[in-house]
Image 1 (cartoon, rainbow, N blue to C red):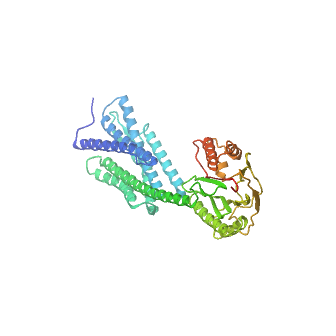
Image 2: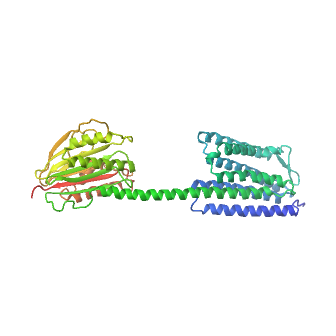
Image 3: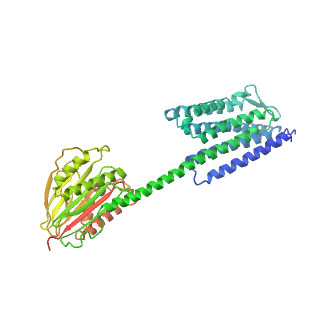
Length: 487
């Protein structure tokens, strides 16, 4: 049996180069597989890239070692490993092109460029498969020795077109790619081409394999390093934002009354309120304060939108409402003026629903204005909570010049008043069912004789029991006042 592989300095250097390349590829694959800071897409891409490179190198080695052994089995094996070698080289070119398309941020042209490189990979694969059954690009003689045919150029033609696309992208979209990533792309293109030129003067030493492995590792290192730097900057930015949001949460919470009992020196009433924002900061707010010794102001409001913009709008709305009410204005007059003030320069088009009331402590008489807010619930002494429904006025900050209708009500000793935002009724469980006002009333009436704090805690427990592990999508805000009357 004639063994074609000859131990020459060139062949030994080739085996050494291939062995080094295999080792580097395997180390790179392991590093990527167990790298905790790699993003999923980056990890998947470079795993495929280095696996294709490993297939290319190892199958080139198998072809070298199998050459010269006659026989049908060897013939099938050498055709198979050669096909895998050439297809793997096409996959590498395809993956490299996709990476450049992604890095270049081509926008609307991305689909076009992607379709082109997909088509070129398909053409390349068909050419290689055809070569397995014909002498189109290469062939093996009766001793299974590899030979290039006159049309060998077609085995790399599709890859050359991919390379042409890559060069166009690097030139046309050069401003979209960072300098070091762009340099790594050019090294990956130029170094293997330079190795091919040098290789023609070195007795077929496979410098292209070494150049491809080196440039591929440099490319992977630069891109992963660039992404890691961006990730660290993003983490730093996120950490700073989180710190600022925590500060905003504290500031927002400090603006709302949160020390209870709120008026320990007053026996005529008891009051309790709670806000649970869906995000770090929310758009709901409640407020209560004494206009004078005999008049208590109650506020429950909900700003459209979420997050910081809604929180800022909430703080402005709260200050304006409190300022006007402390000036002795009625709820309707207050909302009329606040509405006009908020409409000025409201470029974000935010609005706020408000339930605003003032209660005369000595008599229990009250005046309320409802600007698009939820209906309040009242529990009469020895009775049950029921919704008090009436026609609403429009929400505040929707349009200028609105007059807000006022409604009178009367609290008798032992009565409780409960107001809330839509986050209560619209709390949603995993089945996308709403908590609803009916469940809210049932929860309120489980033990209507408890203190205002007990009322709110009962409702919160009912919501948590209903919602379970489902995510909270809206702020949940409640206020309860129990009127005892003059002592």
